[in-house]
Length: 369
Length: 227
Image (cartoon, rainbow over all chains, first blue to last red; front, side):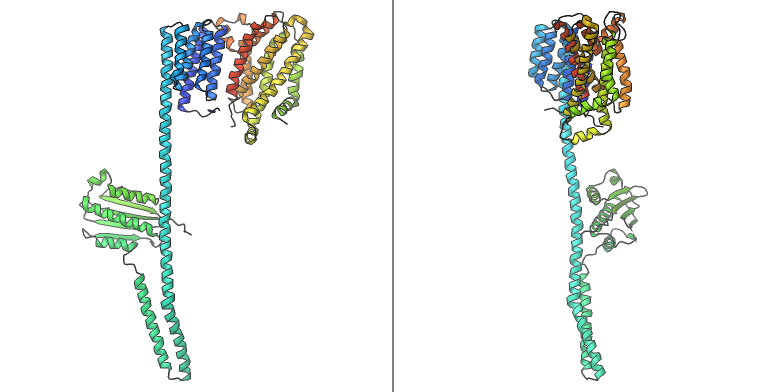
Protein backbone atom coordinates (compact mmCIF):
# COMPACT_ATOMS: atom_id res chain seq x y z
CA UNK A 1 0.00 0.00 0.00
CA UNK A 2 2.76 2.34 0.90
CA UNK A 3 6.46 2.48 0.41
CA UNK A 4 8.50 3.80 3.25
CA UNK A 5 11.33 5.98 2.04
CA UNK A 6 13.94 6.11 4.73
CA UNK A 7 16.72 5.70 2.19
CA UNK A 8 17.68 9.02 0.66
CA UNK A 9 18.08 8.59 -3.05
CA UNK A 10 19.31 11.37 -5.34
CA UNK A 11 15.98 11.81 -7.11
CA UNK A 12 13.82 11.69 -3.97
CA UNK A 13 16.19 14.22 -2.41
CA UNK A 14 15.78 16.48 -5.44
CA UNK A 15 11.99 16.06 -5.12
CA UNK A 16 12.07 17.05 -1.47
CA UNK A 17 14.33 20.03 -2.13
CA UNK A 18 11.99 21.34 -4.85
CA UNK A 19 8.87 20.75 -2.72
CA UNK A 20 10.46 22.36 0.36
CA UNK A 21 11.55 25.40 -1.67
CA UNK A 22 8.09 25.73 -3.20
CA UNK A 23 6.43 25.57 0.23
CA UNK A 24 8.96 28.02 1.64
CA UNK A 25 8.29 30.53 -1.11
CA UNK A 26 4.54 30.14 -0.72
CA UNK A 27 5.01 30.64 3.03
CA UNK A 28 7.02 33.77 2.34
CA UNK A 29 4.25 35.03 0.09
CA UNK A 30 1.77 34.42 2.89
CA UNK A 31 4.08 36.07 5.44
CA UNK A 32 4.57 39.28 3.46
CA UNK A 33 0.96 39.23 2.22
CA UNK A 34 -2.22 39.38 4.23
CA UNK A 35 -1.08 36.72 6.78
CA UNK A 36 -4.65 35.45 6.95
CA UNK A 37 -6.07 32.25 8.34
CA UNK A 38 -7.06 30.88 4.94
CA UNK A 39 -3.51 31.16 3.63
CA UNK A 40 -2.15 29.32 6.67
CA UNK A 41 -4.74 26.54 6.29
CA UNK A 42 -3.77 26.14 2.62
CA UNK A 43 -0.09 26.07 3.54
CA UNK A 44 -0.65 23.44 6.22
CA UNK A 45 -2.75 21.29 3.85
CA UNK A 46 -0.01 21.45 1.21
CA UNK A 47 2.65 20.68 3.82
CA UNK A 48 0.65 17.64 4.94
CA UNK A 49 0.16 16.45 1.35
CA UNK A 50 3.89 16.85 0.67
CA UNK A 51 4.84 14.97 3.83
CA UNK A 52 2.37 12.22 2.99
CA UNK A 53 3.90 11.91 -0.50
CA UNK A 54 7.32 11.68 1.09
CA UNK A 55 6.18 8.94 3.47
CA UNK A 56 3.89 6.98 1.17
CA UNK A 57 3.54 6.32 -2.55
CA UNK A 58 0.37 8.21 -3.26
CA UNK A 59 -1.42 7.90 -6.60
CA UNK A 60 -1.43 10.89 -8.94
CA UNK A 61 -5.15 11.54 -8.53
CA UNK A 62 -4.39 12.90 -5.04
CA UNK A 63 -3.12 16.04 -6.79
CA UNK A 64 -6.80 16.80 -7.26
CA UNK A 65 -7.05 17.32 -3.48
CA UNK A 66 -4.30 19.96 -3.63
CA UNK A 67 -6.04 21.49 -6.62
CA UNK A 68 -9.42 21.58 -4.84
CA UNK A 69 -7.98 23.23 -1.71
CA UNK A 70 -6.08 25.82 -3.76
CA UNK A 71 -9.22 26.56 -5.79
CA UNK A 72 -11.33 26.91 -2.62
CA UNK A 73 -8.85 29.30 -0.99
CA UNK A 74 -8.19 31.36 -4.15
CA UNK A 75 -11.22 33.72 -3.76
CA UNK A 76 -10.14 34.51 -0.17
CA UNK A 77 -6.39 34.64 -0.82
CA UNK A 78 -5.54 35.23 -4.51
CA UNK A 79 -1.88 34.20 -4.01
CA UNK A 80 -3.18 30.65 -3.48
CA UNK A 81 -2.89 30.28 -7.26
CA UNK A 82 0.89 29.95 -6.74
CA UNK A 83 0.12 26.83 -4.69
CA UNK A 84 -1.01 25.17 -7.94
CA UNK A 85 2.68 24.75 -8.75
CA UNK A 86 2.77 21.83 -6.29
CA UNK A 87 0.07 19.62 -7.87
CA UNK A 88 1.43 20.58 -11.28
CA UNK A 89 4.89 19.41 -10.26
CA UNK A 90 3.49 16.16 -8.85
CA UNK A 91 1.47 15.46 -12.01
CA UNK A 92 4.50 15.93 -14.24
CA UNK A 93 6.75 14.07 -11.78
CA UNK A 94 4.50 11.04 -12.26
CA UNK A 95 4.29 11.88 -15.98
CA UNK A 96 0.48 12.02 -16.00
CA UNK A 97 -0.20 14.97 -18.34
CA UNK A 98 -3.93 14.33 -18.02
CA UNK A 99 -3.86 15.78 -14.51
CA UNK A 100 -2.34 18.99 -15.86
CA UNK A 101 -5.61 19.77 -17.68
CA UNK A 102 -7.79 20.52 -14.60
CA UNK A 103 -5.00 22.72 -13.23
CA UNK A 104 -4.87 24.65 -16.49
CA UNK A 105 -8.66 25.05 -16.40
CA UNK A 106 -8.54 26.41 -12.83
CA UNK A 107 -5.76 28.84 -13.73
CA UNK A 108 -7.68 30.17 -16.74
CA UNK A 109 -11.05 30.30 -14.94
CA UNK A 110 -10.22 31.48 -11.41
CA UNK A 111 -6.68 32.77 -11.12
CA UNK A 112 -5.46 36.24 -11.83
CA UNK A 113 -3.12 35.39 -14.69
CA UNK A 114 0.22 37.18 -14.27
CA UNK A 115 3.58 36.67 -15.92
CA UNK A 116 5.17 35.62 -12.63
CA UNK A 117 2.44 33.02 -12.03
CA UNK A 118 2.91 31.62 -15.54
CA UNK A 119 6.69 31.47 -15.06
CA UNK A 120 6.26 29.66 -11.73
CA UNK A 121 3.81 27.14 -13.18
CA UNK A 122 5.90 26.45 -16.29
CA UNK A 123 9.00 26.05 -14.10
CA UNK A 124 7.11 23.56 -11.87
CA UNK A 125 6.01 21.62 -14.93
CA UNK A 126 9.54 21.46 -16.34
CA UNK A 127 11.07 20.56 -12.97
CA UNK A 128 8.61 17.68 -12.58
CA UNK A 129 9.24 16.48 -16.12
CA UNK A 130 13.03 16.67 -15.79
CA UNK A 131 12.99 14.82 -12.48
CA UNK A 132 10.71 12.17 -13.97
CA UNK A 133 13.07 11.70 -16.90
CA UNK A 134 16.07 11.70 -14.57
CA UNK A 135 14.65 9.05 -12.26
CA UNK A 136 13.70 6.95 -15.28
CA UNK A 137 17.25 7.17 -16.61
CA UNK A 138 18.65 6.40 -13.17
CA UNK A 139 16.45 3.33 -12.87
CA UNK A 140 17.57 2.20 -16.31
CA UNK A 141 21.27 2.66 -15.39
CA UNK A 142 20.69 0.76 -12.17
CA UNK A 143 19.04 -2.11 -14.01
CA UNK A 144 21.95 -2.20 -16.44
CA UNK A 145 24.51 -2.09 -13.65
CA UNK A 146 22.66 -4.85 -11.79
CA UNK A 147 22.57 -6.99 -14.90
CA UNK A 148 26.30 -6.46 -15.50
CA UNK A 149 27.07 -7.25 -11.89
CA UNK A 150 24.99 -10.42 -12.10
CA UNK A 151 26.78 -11.48 -15.28
CA UNK A 152 30.13 -10.81 -13.67
CA UNK A 153 29.21 -12.91 -10.64
CA UNK A 154 28.07 -15.73 -12.91
CA UNK A 155 31.34 -15.58 -14.85
CA UNK A 156 33.33 -15.60 -11.62
CA UNK A 157 31.38 -18.59 -10.42
CA UNK A 158 31.86 -20.35 -13.76
CA UNK A 159 35.58 -19.64 -13.61
CA UNK A 160 35.78 -21.15 -10.13
CA UNK A 161 33.89 -24.21 -11.31
CA UNK A 162 36.19 -24.62 -14.31
CA UNK A 163 39.25 -24.33 -12.12
CA UNK A 164 37.87 -26.91 -9.73
CA UNK A 165 37.02 -29.22 -12.62
CA UNK A 166 40.57 -28.79 -13.92
CA UNK A 167 42.03 -29.71 -10.57
CA UNK A 168 39.68 -32.66 -10.21
CA UNK A 169 40.62 -33.96 -13.66
CA UNK A 170 44.32 -33.76 -12.81
CA UNK A 171 43.68 -35.51 -9.50
CA UNK A 172 41.65 -38.32 -11.06
CA UNK A 173 44.28 -38.78 -13.78
CA UNK A 174 46.87 -39.17 -11.02
CA UNK A 175 44.71 -41.72 -9.19
CA UNK A 176 44.04 -43.71 -12.38
CA UNK A 177 47.75 -43.84 -13.17
CA UNK A 178 48.60 -44.95 -9.65
CA UNK A 179 46.02 -47.69 -9.90
CA UNK A 180 47.46 -48.86 -13.21
CA UNK A 181 50.99 -48.97 -11.80
CA UNK A 182 49.90 -50.90 -8.72
CA UNK A 183 48.01 -53.44 -10.91
CA UNK A 184 50.98 -53.88 -13.22
CA UNK A 185 53.41 -54.38 -10.33
CA UNK A 186 51.06 -56.77 -8.56
CA UNK A 187 49.98 -58.84 -11.56
CA UNK A 188 53.30 -59.20 -13.39
CA UNK A 189 56.38 -58.30 -11.42
CA UNK A 190 54.93 -59.32 -8.04
CA UNK A 191 53.94 -62.81 -9.19
CA UNK A 192 57.31 -63.50 -10.83
CA UNK A 193 59.19 -62.34 -7.72
CA UNK A 194 57.02 -64.55 -5.45
CA UNK A 195 57.63 -67.53 -7.75
CA UNK A 196 61.39 -66.81 -7.72
CA UNK A 197 61.37 -66.62 -3.91
CA UNK A 198 59.56 -69.96 -3.67
CA UNK A 199 62.02 -71.52 -6.13
CA UNK A 200 64.98 -70.22 -4.11
CA UNK A 201 63.49 -71.61 -0.88
CA UNK A 202 62.99 -75.00 -2.64
CA UNK A 203 66.56 -74.85 -3.97
CA UNK A 204 67.89 -74.21 -0.46
CA UNK A 205 65.98 -77.20 0.92
CA UNK A 206 67.08 -79.51 -1.93
CA UNK A 207 70.68 -78.36 -1.59
CA UNK A 208 70.63 -79.21 2.12
CA UNK A 209 69.25 -82.68 1.30
CA UNK A 210 71.83 -83.07 -1.49
CA UNK A 211 69.17 -83.60 -4.13
CA UNK A 212 70.28 -83.40 -7.75
CA UNK A 213 67.22 -81.35 -8.74
CA UNK A 214 68.57 -78.38 -6.77
CA UNK A 215 70.45 -77.18 -9.83
CA UNK A 216 67.35 -77.07 -12.00
CA UNK A 217 65.45 -75.31 -9.21
CA UNK A 218 68.14 -72.60 -9.08
CA UNK A 219 67.90 -72.31 -12.84
CA UNK A 220 64.12 -71.80 -12.53
CA UNK A 221 64.59 -69.10 -9.87
CA UNK A 222 67.12 -67.35 -12.07
CA UNK A 223 64.68 -67.45 -14.99
CA UNK A 224 61.92 -66.04 -12.80
CA UNK A 225 64.15 -63.20 -11.59
CA UNK A 226 65.25 -62.47 -15.15
CA UNK A 227 61.62 -62.34 -16.31
CA UNK A 228 60.56 -60.05 -13.43
CA UNK A 229 63.55 -57.78 -14.09
CA UNK A 230 62.53 -57.58 -17.76
CA UNK A 231 58.90 -56.88 -16.83
CA UNK A 232 59.94 -54.18 -14.37
CA UNK A 233 61.95 -52.54 -17.10
CA UNK A 234 59.04 -52.78 -19.51
CA UNK A 235 56.65 -51.32 -16.91
CA UNK A 236 58.92 -48.38 -16.26
CA UNK A 237 59.36 -47.90 -19.99
CA UNK A 238 55.56 -47.94 -20.49
CA UNK A 239 55.01 -45.54 -17.62
CA UNK A 240 57.31 -42.94 -18.96
CA UNK A 241 55.14 -40.48 -20.92
CA UNK A 242 55.95 -39.97 -24.54
CA UNK A 243 55.81 -36.25 -23.99
CA UNK A 244 57.86 -34.52 -21.31
CA UNK A 245 55.97 -32.86 -18.43
CA UNK A 246 56.85 -30.36 -15.72
CA UNK A 247 60.33 -28.90 -15.72
CA UNK A 248 61.35 -31.41 -18.39
CA UNK A 249 58.77 -29.91 -20.72
CA UNK A 250 60.15 -26.42 -20.17
CA UNK A 251 63.67 -27.74 -20.73
CA UNK A 252 62.49 -29.38 -23.93
CA UNK A 253 60.94 -26.11 -25.16
CA UNK A 254 64.16 -24.23 -24.44
CA UNK A 255 66.29 -26.96 -26.01
CA UNK A 256 64.18 -27.16 -29.17
CA UNK A 257 64.17 -23.39 -29.63
CA UNK A 258 66.44 -22.90 -32.63
CA UNK A 259 66.50 -19.11 -33.08
CA UNK A 260 69.09 -18.53 -30.33
CA UNK A 261 70.30 -20.35 -27.25
CA UNK A 262 68.04 -20.09 -24.21
CA UNK A 263 69.37 -20.55 -20.69
CA UNK A 264 66.99 -22.11 -18.19
CA UNK A 265 67.61 -21.82 -14.44
CA UNK A 266 65.42 -23.74 -12.00
CA UNK A 267 65.39 -22.86 -8.30
CA UNK A 268 63.48 -24.66 -5.56
CA UNK A 269 61.44 -27.85 -5.41
CA UNK A 270 59.02 -28.11 -8.34
CA UNK A 271 57.55 -31.48 -7.42
CA UNK A 272 54.55 -29.91 -5.66
CA UNK A 273 53.48 -27.83 -8.66
CA UNK A 274 50.16 -29.20 -9.98
CA UNK A 275 49.82 -30.28 -13.61
CA UNK A 276 47.36 -27.54 -14.62
CA UNK A 277 49.92 -24.86 -13.68
CA UNK A 278 52.60 -26.50 -15.83
CA UNK A 279 50.33 -26.12 -18.85
CA UNK A 280 50.02 -22.37 -18.22
CA UNK A 281 53.76 -21.99 -17.59
CA UNK A 282 54.61 -23.85 -20.79
CA UNK A 283 52.17 -21.70 -22.83
CA UNK A 284 53.64 -18.59 -21.24
CA UNK A 285 57.19 -19.63 -22.12
CA UNK A 286 56.24 -20.45 -25.72
CA UNK A 287 54.41 -17.13 -26.14
CA UNK A 288 57.35 -15.20 -24.68
CA UNK A 289 59.88 -16.91 -26.95
CA UNK A 290 57.69 -16.42 -30.03
CA UNK A 291 57.32 -12.71 -29.22
CA UNK A 292 61.06 -12.37 -28.80
CA UNK A 293 61.62 -13.84 -32.27
CA UNK A 294 58.92 -11.70 -33.84
CA UNK A 295 59.49 -8.34 -32.19
CA UNK A 296 62.92 -8.04 -30.60
CA UNK A 297 66.49 -8.25 -31.76
CA UNK A 298 67.62 -10.12 -28.70
CA UNK A 299 71.00 -11.79 -28.36
CA UNK A 300 70.55 -13.35 -24.96
CA UNK A 301 67.45 -14.90 -23.43
CA UNK A 302 67.33 -16.11 -19.87
CA UNK A 303 64.49 -18.14 -18.40
CA UNK A 304 64.30 -18.67 -14.67
CA UNK A 305 61.81 -20.73 -12.73
CA UNK A 306 61.52 -20.10 -8.98
CA UNK A 307 59.36 -22.38 -6.93
CA UNK A 308 58.48 -21.75 -3.30
CA UNK A 309 55.94 -23.33 -0.97
CA UNK A 310 53.05 -21.14 -2.14
CA UNK A 311 54.14 -19.61 -5.47
CA UNK A 312 55.78 -20.46 -8.72
CA UNK A 313 57.37 -17.67 -10.76
CA UNK A 314 58.50 -17.88 -14.37
CA UNK A 315 60.62 -15.07 -15.73
CA UNK A 316 61.67 -14.71 -19.39
CA UNK A 317 64.19 -11.92 -19.93
CA UNK A 318 65.85 -10.76 -23.16
CA UNK A 319 68.17 -7.90 -23.95
CA UNK A 320 66.44 -6.83 -27.18
CA UNK A 321 64.12 -3.87 -27.91
CA UNK A 322 60.36 -4.33 -28.14
CA UNK A 323 58.66 -1.08 -29.11
CA UNK A 324 55.43 -2.66 -30.35
CA UNK A 325 54.78 -4.73 -27.26
CA UNK A 326 55.34 -1.80 -24.98
CA UNK A 327 52.32 -0.10 -26.52
CA UNK A 328 49.73 -2.79 -25.91
CA UNK A 329 49.88 -6.55 -25.30
CA UNK A 330 48.70 -8.78 -28.16
CA UNK A 331 45.96 -11.39 -28.20
CA UNK A 332 48.33 -14.15 -27.07
CA UNK A 333 49.45 -12.24 -24.00
CA UNK A 334 45.89 -11.16 -23.22
CA UNK A 335 44.73 -14.78 -23.32
CA UNK A 336 47.65 -15.83 -21.13
CA UNK A 337 46.82 -13.10 -18.65
CA UNK A 338 43.21 -14.30 -18.47
CA UNK A 339 44.35 -17.88 -17.92
CA UNK A 340 46.75 -16.80 -15.19
CA UNK A 341 44.04 -14.69 -13.55
CA UNK A 342 41.67 -17.65 -13.69
CA UNK A 343 43.96 -19.59 -11.34
CA UNK A 344 44.56 -16.53 -9.15
CA UNK A 345 47.89 -15.55 -10.70
CA UNK A 346 49.16 -12.65 -12.76
CA UNK A 347 51.34 -11.76 -15.72
CA UNK A 348 53.41 -8.61 -15.72
CA UNK A 349 55.98 -7.01 -18.00
CA UNK A 350 59.06 -5.00 -17.34
CA UNK A 351 60.70 -2.90 -20.08
CA UNK A 352 63.84 -1.96 -18.17
CA UNK A 353 67.10 -3.32 -19.71
CA UNK A 354 65.35 -5.15 -22.53
CA UNK A 355 62.11 -6.93 -21.96
CA UNK A 356 61.05 -9.20 -19.13
CA UNK A 357 57.85 -11.23 -18.89
CA UNK A 358 56.97 -12.50 -15.43
CA UNK A 359 54.28 -15.03 -14.68
CA UNK A 360 53.43 -15.65 -11.02
CA UNK A 361 50.99 -18.42 -10.10
CA UNK A 362 49.82 -19.48 -6.65
CA UNK A 363 50.13 -23.15 -5.62
CA UNK A 364 46.93 -24.27 -3.98
CA UNK A 365 47.51 -26.78 -1.22
CA UNK A 366 43.96 -27.99 -0.71
CA UNK A 367 43.42 -31.64 -1.40
CA UNK A 368 40.51 -32.92 -3.40
CA UNK A 369 38.47 -35.69 -1.89
CA UNK B 1 -2.21 -6.98 27.99
CA UNK B 2 -2.42 -4.71 25.00
CA UNK B 3 0.24 -2.10 24.33
CA UNK B 4 -2.40 0.55 25.00
CA UNK B 5 -3.09 -0.76 28.52
CA UNK B 6 0.60 -1.24 29.20
CA UNK B 7 1.45 2.30 28.05
CA UNK B 8 -1.35 3.63 30.27
CA UNK B 9 -0.11 1.75 33.33
CA UNK B 10 3.50 2.58 32.66
CA UNK B 11 2.64 6.30 32.37
CA UNK B 12 0.98 6.49 35.79
CA UNK B 13 3.37 4.13 37.55
CA UNK B 14 5.88 6.81 38.52
CA UNK B 15 5.17 9.43 41.19
CA UNK B 16 6.55 12.16 38.98
CA UNK B 17 3.99 11.45 36.29
CA UNK B 18 1.17 11.14 38.83
CA UNK B 19 2.02 14.52 40.27
CA UNK B 20 2.15 16.01 36.78
CA UNK B 21 -1.15 14.39 35.92
CA UNK B 22 -3.18 15.11 39.06
CA UNK B 23 -1.20 17.64 41.11
CA UNK B 24 -0.67 20.19 38.39
CA UNK B 25 -4.37 20.63 37.61
CA UNK B 26 -4.82 21.84 41.16
CA UNK B 27 -2.07 24.46 40.72
CA UNK B 28 -3.45 25.49 37.32
CA UNK B 29 -6.93 25.97 38.75
CA UNK B 30 -5.76 27.87 41.81
CA UNK B 31 -3.55 30.40 39.99
CA UNK B 32 -4.93 33.99 40.18
CA UNK B 33 -6.41 35.96 37.30
CA UNK B 34 -4.19 37.79 34.80
CA UNK B 35 -4.21 41.36 33.53
CA UNK B 36 -7.14 40.59 31.23
CA UNK B 37 -9.19 39.07 34.01
CA UNK B 38 -8.85 35.50 32.74
CA UNK B 39 -7.32 32.86 35.10
CA UNK B 40 -3.57 32.70 34.49
CA UNK B 41 -3.40 28.96 35.01
CA UNK B 42 -5.51 28.31 31.90
CA UNK B 43 -3.13 30.40 29.83
CA UNK B 44 -0.08 28.51 31.09
CA UNK B 45 -1.74 25.13 30.83
CA UNK B 46 -0.67 24.76 27.18
CA UNK B 47 2.99 24.92 28.20
CA UNK B 48 2.36 22.29 30.88
CA UNK B 49 0.68 20.12 28.29
CA UNK B 50 3.77 20.39 26.09
CA UNK B 51 6.05 19.41 29.01
CA UNK B 52 3.83 16.52 30.03
CA UNK B 53 3.52 15.28 26.43
CA UNK B 54 7.29 15.48 26.04
CA UNK B 55 7.77 13.43 29.22
CA UNK B 56 5.30 10.80 28.05
CA UNK B 57 6.66 10.52 24.50
CA UNK B 58 10.19 10.12 25.85
CA UNK B 59 9.06 6.70 27.04
CA UNK B 60 9.04 5.66 23.37
CA UNK B 61 12.57 6.99 23.10
CA UNK B 62 13.53 4.94 26.14
CA UNK B 63 12.11 1.91 24.34
CA UNK B 64 14.36 2.71 21.40
CA UNK B 65 17.37 3.16 23.65
CA UNK B 66 16.70 -0.07 25.58
CA UNK B 67 16.27 -2.00 22.30
CA UNK B 68 12.66 -2.84 23.19
CA UNK B 69 11.72 -1.68 19.70
CA UNK B 70 13.91 -4.45 18.29
CA UNK B 71 11.76 -6.96 20.14
CA UNK B 72 8.63 -5.20 18.93
CA UNK B 73 10.05 -5.53 15.42
CA UNK B 74 10.06 -9.33 15.63
CA UNK B 75 6.76 -9.54 17.54
CA UNK B 76 3.48 -10.08 15.66
CA UNK B 77 2.60 -6.38 15.84
CA UNK B 78 3.26 -3.60 13.39
CA UNK B 79 5.31 -0.58 14.26
CA UNK B 80 2.32 1.61 13.37
CA UNK B 81 0.12 -0.25 15.88
CA UNK B 82 2.77 0.09 18.59
CA UNK B 83 3.10 3.85 17.98
CA UNK B 84 -0.64 4.41 17.64
CA UNK B 85 -1.50 2.55 20.87
CA UNK B 86 1.18 4.41 22.82
CA UNK B 87 0.02 7.77 21.48
CA UNK B 88 -3.62 6.95 22.21
CA UNK B 89 -2.75 6.11 25.80
CA UNK B 90 -0.85 9.38 26.21
CA UNK B 91 -3.72 11.29 24.60
CA UNK B 92 -6.22 9.68 26.98
CA UNK B 93 -4.18 10.83 29.96
CA UNK B 94 -4.05 14.40 28.67
CA UNK B 95 -7.77 14.36 27.86
CA UNK B 96 -8.58 13.21 31.40
CA UNK B 97 -6.30 15.92 32.74
CA UNK B 98 -8.12 18.50 30.59
CA UNK B 99 -11.46 17.31 31.98
CA UNK B 100 -10.15 17.75 35.52
CA UNK B 101 -8.79 21.21 34.71
CA UNK B 102 -11.93 22.48 32.99
CA UNK B 103 -14.25 20.88 35.58
CA UNK B 104 -12.20 22.17 38.50
CA UNK B 105 -11.92 25.58 36.86
CA UNK B 106 -15.69 25.76 36.50
CA UNK B 107 -16.12 24.91 40.18
CA UNK B 108 -13.48 27.43 41.31
CA UNK B 109 -13.87 30.32 38.87
CA UNK B 110 -17.50 29.91 37.91
CA UNK B 111 -18.89 31.10 34.57
CA UNK B 112 -15.96 33.50 33.92
CA UNK B 113 -14.21 30.75 31.98
CA UNK B 114 -16.66 31.14 29.09
CA UNK B 115 -17.79 28.21 26.94
CA UNK B 116 -16.45 25.19 28.82
CA UNK B 117 -17.02 22.70 26.01
CA UNK B 118 -15.09 24.87 23.58
CA UNK B 119 -12.35 25.29 26.18
CA UNK B 120 -12.11 21.55 26.73
CA UNK B 121 -12.12 20.91 22.98
CA UNK B 122 -9.26 23.31 22.33
CA UNK B 123 -7.26 21.76 25.18
CA UNK B 124 -7.91 18.26 23.82
CA UNK B 125 -6.86 19.22 20.29
CA UNK B 126 -3.79 20.98 21.62
CA UNK B 127 -2.96 17.82 23.61
CA UNK B 128 -2.91 15.86 20.33
CA UNK B 129 -0.69 18.53 18.78
CA UNK B 130 1.65 18.50 21.79
CA UNK B 131 2.02 14.72 21.66
CA UNK B 132 2.62 14.60 17.91
CA UNK B 133 5.06 17.52 18.18
CA UNK B 134 7.02 15.64 20.87
CA UNK B 135 7.02 12.53 18.68
CA UNK B 136 8.32 14.50 15.69
CA UNK B 137 10.93 16.17 17.85
CA UNK B 138 12.13 12.88 19.35
CA UNK B 139 12.45 11.29 15.92
CA UNK B 140 15.40 13.58 15.19
CA UNK B 141 17.35 12.46 18.23
CA UNK B 142 19.03 9.23 19.26
CA UNK B 143 19.42 9.93 22.95
CA UNK B 144 16.47 10.90 25.19
CA UNK B 145 18.59 13.18 27.38
CA UNK B 146 19.76 15.28 24.44
CA UNK B 147 16.24 15.47 23.10
CA UNK B 148 14.76 16.50 26.47
CA UNK B 149 17.39 19.19 27.01
CA UNK B 150 16.74 20.88 23.64
CA UNK B 151 13.00 20.36 23.98
CA UNK B 152 12.90 22.64 27.06
CA UNK B 153 14.38 25.45 24.99
CA UNK B 154 12.00 24.86 22.10
CA UNK B 155 8.95 24.89 24.40
CA UNK B 156 10.14 28.16 25.90
CA UNK B 157 10.50 29.70 22.43
CA UNK B 158 7.03 28.46 21.52
CA UNK B 159 5.68 29.98 24.72
CA UNK B 160 7.20 33.36 23.88
CA UNK B 161 6.18 33.29 20.21
CA UNK B 162 2.69 31.99 20.93
CA UNK B 163 1.95 34.74 23.40
CA UNK B 164 1.91 32.69 26.61
CA UNK B 165 4.68 34.53 28.42
CA UNK B 166 4.50 37.91 26.65
CA UNK B 167 1.27 39.36 25.27
CA UNK B 168 1.39 39.36 21.48
CA UNK B 169 0.09 42.91 21.33
CA UNK B 170 3.42 44.22 22.65
CA UNK B 171 5.51 42.14 20.24
CA UNK B 172 6.88 43.65 17.00
CA UNK B 173 4.70 43.10 13.94
CA UNK B 174 7.01 40.57 12.22
CA UNK B 175 6.95 38.47 15.38
CA UNK B 176 3.18 38.72 15.52
CA UNK B 177 3.07 37.39 11.95
CA UNK B 178 5.52 34.57 12.66
CA UNK B 179 3.60 33.59 15.80
CA UNK B 180 0.82 32.21 13.60
CA UNK B 181 2.99 29.28 12.57
CA UNK B 182 3.35 28.23 16.22
CA UNK B 183 0.64 25.91 17.62
CA UNK B 184 0.56 27.74 20.97
CA UNK B 185 -0.77 30.84 19.17
CA UNK B 186 -3.81 28.86 18.05
CA UNK B 187 -4.35 27.49 21.54
CA UNK B 188 -4.56 31.01 22.90
CA UNK B 189 -6.70 32.05 19.97
CA UNK B 190 -9.11 29.24 20.80
CA UNK B 191 -9.05 30.02 24.54
CA UNK B 192 -9.88 33.65 23.76
CA UNK B 193 -12.80 32.59 21.55
CA UNK B 194 -14.08 30.25 24.28
CA UNK B 195 -13.71 32.98 26.92
CA UNK B 196 -15.70 35.37 24.75
CA UNK B 197 -18.41 32.76 24.22
CA UNK B 198 -18.05 33.12 20.45
CA UNK B 199 -20.12 30.87 18.16
CA UNK B 200 -18.74 27.42 17.24
CA UNK B 201 -18.04 28.37 13.62
CA UNK B 202 -15.29 30.69 14.83
CA UNK B 203 -13.77 27.97 16.96
CA UNK B 204 -13.47 25.69 13.92
CA UNK B 205 -10.49 27.65 12.55
CA UNK B 206 -8.09 27.03 15.47
CA UNK B 207 -9.33 23.45 15.80
CA UNK B 208 -8.72 22.79 12.09
CA UNK B 209 -5.27 24.38 12.20
CA UNK B 210 -4.34 22.34 15.27
CA UNK B 211 -5.49 19.16 13.47
CA UNK B 212 -3.32 20.07 10.48
CA UNK B 213 -0.33 20.70 12.76
CA UNK B 214 -0.97 17.34 14.44
CA UNK B 215 -1.10 15.51 11.10
CA UNK B 216 2.12 17.13 9.90
CA UNK B 217 3.97 16.30 13.12
CA UNK B 218 2.64 12.74 13.07
CA UNK B 219 3.84 12.23 9.49
CA UNK B 220 7.31 13.41 10.47
CA UNK B 221 7.44 11.64 13.81
CA UNK B 222 6.07 8.23 12.96
CA UNK B 223 9.07 7.25 10.87
CA UNK B 224 10.51 3.94 11.95
CA UNK B 225 13.88 4.45 13.58
CA UNK B 226 15.27 1.46 15.37
CA UNK B 227 18.85 2.64 15.62
